[in-house]
Image (cartoon, rainbow, N blue to C red):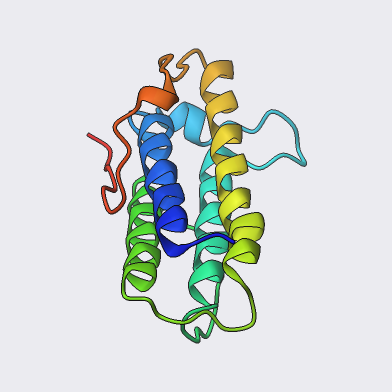
Amino acid sequence: MINRDALRHFLATLAYRGTNVLQNLSVEIATFRPAKSVRTPVEILNHINGVLTYAVSFFTPLTSTRPEPADWNIEVERFFQVLTRLDQLLAEDVPLKEVSEEQLLQGPLADAMLHLGQIGIFRRMGGSPVAAENYVQADIQIGKLRRPD
């Protein structure tokens, strides 16, 4: 069984890795589309924000889980806002509705991590790779949601 602290640690990991992937991304990379049917990084980030908002909807009713597309800076801000909201809901022990903690992890939270990796690939393709780091040694702590510099 997954406990709330494990989920909160996963959110802090998303925030940490998100900070590394999202900060200092050029407009050229944010809007790069390598093929007609492939999302741009800004579209991928909007999707991430949608799946994280979907996760919020299992705690509290929402009228929509699809944020309107916005520019890169707004999408980055949304990413950290929705992570903060999810962390608060977990910290306050708000009950989940319709899904378990395991389903929350295997669905929207895992999806968000996967898509951050896609943006990281776009960075590398654009000549601006994320610096190498040993994430086992990273300073990732529950409730510590890093923000881009």
